Image 1 (cartoon, rainbow, N blue to C red):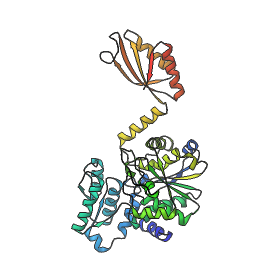
Image 2: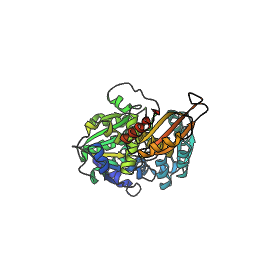
Image 3: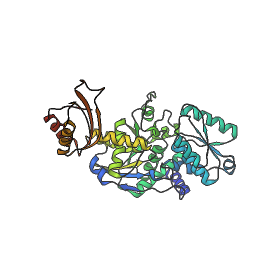
Image 4: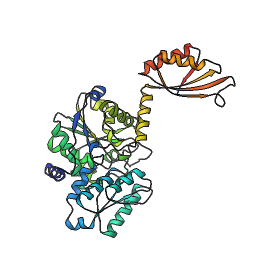
Length: 398
């Protein structure tokens, strides 16, 4: 795949897919020790980069294929991308989704005019059913990543990023099935061969890294980066990455959560787990990026609001900006007032209180108190604990 195919794809999707901004983020750059440029593909109409490949693939359909319709398998972003661009082109679209797919993703896909078929307990079962329907109904199957037209479309992300920020030296690209990183690696190899392209996988699903190393694929477990939780990577992306010598880094789950929180707090950007994986690589492998200009693909922003809230709270706890304390206190008048006064004098803000007298306390003459306190930093939290211990209270963190 060469620059001609990538530029043709860029021209084909012009006007149908948003040319998203590439912005340098000074606050993130200072925090991580390198210049961070964010490619904000979370701003696409469906919230993810998948529109690029879907728009390019559908634009190449023959008149007969358009008349017959298309089919895809996805539990998320690819489903909405195919549905949106099929609707735009007047093409009937069927999307097969596993039965476990959250209702919000089903309704969003249907809102773009697609027929949604729920089938199977796994993505593999949904994919098999999609292929069966394609044969039975004469539909064109639109693969999420193992298709040259889809890969070329995804590669337009790197074309735009390198054109808009020519100072970029390294690209950090999330890897699921491999279509995005393969397209971006092909773009960089042709346009800027001096640029290093690094793929990023989460530690529970390092399928591409394992395949590149010639090891058996062993993946599984819960992950917040479900958009790149892939077992079977694309054979075409795999071959392209081997040919181009592209390395894939693996990041821990905690780094992905930290990256989501940092994007919100420092860049005011909402990213899903997969969309934050590029920044997670910068956090988990700082030696690979130190002092460089790094292009980070924020490739999706479709994160559940409850999950986002939990990630932000967990990050506050890890950073020491939320203090959770357990105290065994004497059950007598004035104790709660004294504790509140000590916390307030140290500058803490109590945001949650649980006072249990009957069941959890070790003695009938004592009570258990749990406090959630908002603090500036870990040092202020330590000062609050010291103030409470000075009042002869036994304090446990947790």
